Image 1 (cartoon, rainbow, N blue to C red):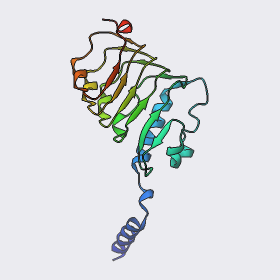
Image 2: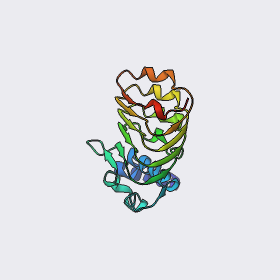
Image 3: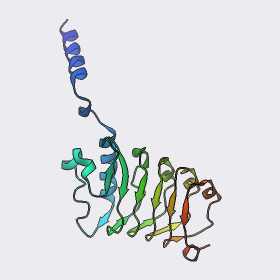
Image 4: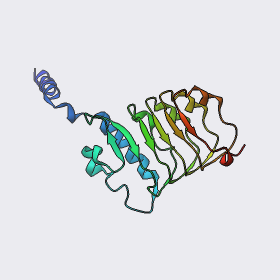
Length: 181
């Protein structure tokens, strides 16, 4: 009987706790952003608001915009932020409601991870004016909601994947003269 009461009490506590006590999508997103931040090089304090102590205020982090009810990140806007690093430490699956991703005008390098296609609700993607290299992943063609795509002023090589033709809604800025074939 003693064990039953203990388990019963645990069940009552579980049922009474407010939903914010458990991991929310914003907590998952915040953890993904903090992991990515830890892999970046910054010459300024641009991302100081991104911290564990400020975890509950994700919607107030610099460059982060949340949807109307504040339950999820809808935009990551970090243009011209003097950031460098790669996208390989950003867990794209943590952002199912992301519609805008703008990191143009920084010093990001490496390749564009194929996992970027996990951002299935993305409408705006700006990766311009960085130092990305390698080929454009064909998975970008899976971003069928994309309306704006700009990749110019990078160091891509190879052929432009035919899957980009799947982006019926998108306006493109690729600038062929900087795309090495």
